[in-house]
Length: 166
Image (cartoon, rainbow, N blue to C red; front, side, top):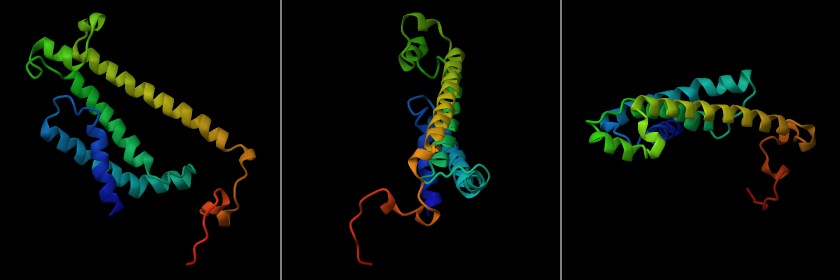
């Protein structure tokens, strides 16, 4: 059941990038279908591989629910921006309003805008990898005092919890 819920959310994550563009319903269905499959396969096959080989533990499934569909959505947004035509957006003025072109940006063509969208993906990935690496290195410092293996999933090690009779 969790895979179905996450697959549904993954489609929304991906389509959110191009939601205001002329993606059309069939385009949204295709993107949602692809992201649902990718997300489900990621939960089933990639998550155990990342955990066993790279020691990356994704407790909330952020990688499969947000990262992979977000990357697919970014690509869809770049392709949709690059393939914008005056006929679809009611002339050049429609394209200018859609992409909020002002002054110097008004000379951009849709393919140049698609390139900017793709560059945004690269910058986001760079920030994610560098920032994640820095945080990972900080969290591996011995000053944090890791709990013993038998207490790894016990929140009482870090938090004051009320006592419950079970």
